[in-house]
Image 1 (cartoon, rainbow, N blue to C red):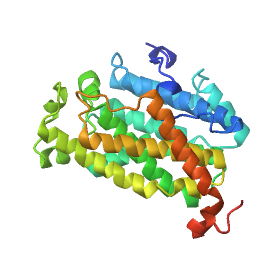
Image 2: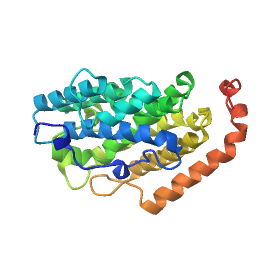
Image 3: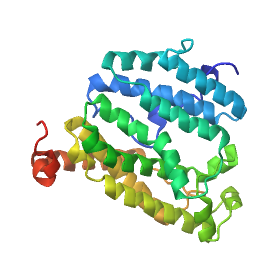
Length: 294
């Protein structure tokens, strides 16, 4: 396997657990966001490819980074995003930070504590939200902190949903060791058909931390100037809250903790409608917005 393209899994933006540049997003912004997604997807596929050695993964990720920055040969997986960044005058920083997360995945399979996991999420998830906000020209000082909280929660929710698969398929465990020990769980429990009571306690502990992060991020839709982006984030936030609550009571080893298509659509539409109704009053709700553009 000599190229990034050969390592691709075939997974696309419609296969993700949360909306990626849905039609709530204005068409002029969807292109750059999808270019970003597919660049990042290529890097993620490299990191998760069981047929590649850690050293080969790092080499391909470095090649992908160099293609984006112009420091190396062109790569078809990088070219669309490179064009989009140039057209918008945006730096490659967020995409490159995600490649740093995939480099971690290439050689790191265990996490000692919550702080280590949060550090990983800072590179594996936080840059996604920041990029979307930048594409829309949103104010980083007003929006990044709440976006960071939501993105971290989304990443950990995904880890919890896939904890058994990650252990079986790539021997990767994102559940922190100290939280496993706190509840008397073992890493090997992740290979079972059903979660033990101890492992369920670990999952519940982490799901509650996700709910706490989502509460931190709850104001974000009202802090965003672009109405369509506000609705998209409100939908994502609501979907995440429901998934985290589901993980408090369901076993991701033996149950599918995902939204069905109908529930997904209804939940997203309900959250978007509630946020839209609140838009005229948002400056009264958030004093920091009183000087913001309408």
